[in-house]
Length: 346
Image 1 (cartoon, rainbow, N blue to C red):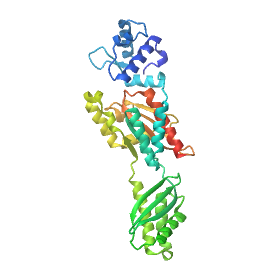
Image 2: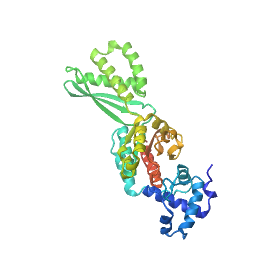
Image 3: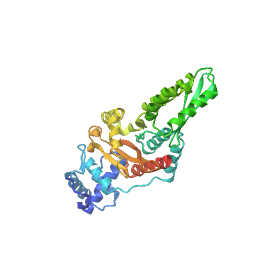
Image 4: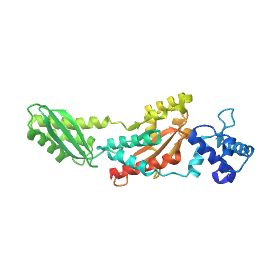
């Protein structure tokens, strides 16, 4: 067990904080001479080395190479994030960028993609969002004629989202038949999920074949099948900006980067990790091997849940990157993005 931050001397806390903050800023080991040149501690390099040695024995710092430089361990990063970090709230430009990107999306899924793109760009990490797990309930269906043989299938969800698909219809199908099919589906399927609607529709069409012509029946059956198939094929996890994980500082550690990209590509484990953040009221930070998924890549995830208008958690948004993340800046940025998505869904 590592000593809690309150058990460290003031001198040890100061040296530890400088090492962590310098490492997170540069990604390079921090030596005693570097710290002494800062002048804020009024300590000799020898005294600083002694303190750093004590911190290493506590498991908070490590020497990755033969050089005298130290880096924080994952245990040290956890202690820093939980007990010492002073967060820096997103500035007005960053808040405006996140809000503008999220608001630019028409459908909910487009807004989620925009949110991950904004987070990725601002944090220089890969942005992640877990699409709402609960099935959306339907409000309205419509079929709008476009051209001979073509119509626009329109679905309106209970959250106000609108999705369109162009579909093929018989060339001789009248606009009135399209209207009839849309009205039929809205009257009988509103308030249901897609799965519930598909089951109900099969029973209702079988019982009411006499009241609908064959073309309308086929259109209705095809419409619900189209939406059901489309919904089942949507990604559970949206990832944007994975290329941000490769920069000049990772050139010497490409095996770790490849491992991380493989973990992201696998998605299933990332989904389970993000899903574990659904129960929290605040932003969660997962550092390195604290989660077995990142035992090899040494990566961190910062994630926050977002809610619907009734306060229910519907998804999780966050970022993934190396453990040397600027936690003080990225944690509140993820939290602000989650709040922005919650306002949109409301």
